[in-house]
Image (cartoon, rainbow, N blue to C red):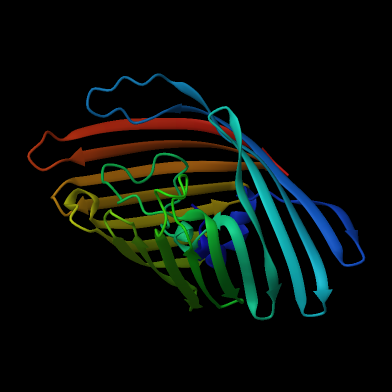
Length: 317
């Protein structure tokens, strides 16, 4: 997930890990840019319940995107964006939307993420929140109408999926998904709040909210968040999650240490700690390593713990 709250708090740190688009056309108020990334990992994932998972090469990211902006007037710009990603050996169009932006903010319609995609402050690479069911809340859709306004100190947004989970239009007709987000920065502390509600025809309705705070001081970052989620009549998918985060950046290195704890309403519990380091070899090249430890403690069951680790390389433009 994207980290809007950190983008406000520590943009310099994020710059090291963000793909930069290349402008290939810019004339008469029309600009076209291309961005993308190739990322691979050698990873040992967590092994729970007697699993035996091999050390694996993970093709984490193969992405190519195009952005078009057209200056309609001095105060209004039309935008179009589409993105292709490699998933499971096949190429998928993950984003395809168009809209308008100006001093009023930005309105986009189409296949895109919603505001809930910006939740969770964890800075893990792959070995983050584990051991607790997070309820399966959607954070994207094919029929999303989204509005967002932001300036240097404040942002707010709302998104609505008109026909959520629409892989089968008839089966998912009348499903809906709406979420909201708001944030501000006060004395170096980036504060944000989110709320999402999801209605499933013939299924369980659900809602969730999250509050978070991230404090940035020179090269240091400290953060905490609390998330509460509720799925009707499903205690194993309802509960809460607490996140704690610490980061330190020096030169071309960025270090993160995180701790997460979650508990479902059926008293299943899980916790996780991770640590990672990223080295910026070039503005478009980074390499990283991460280790993690996770524990599951199901009610009435046997506790189980596991370790994981990975190293990776990303080349972007």
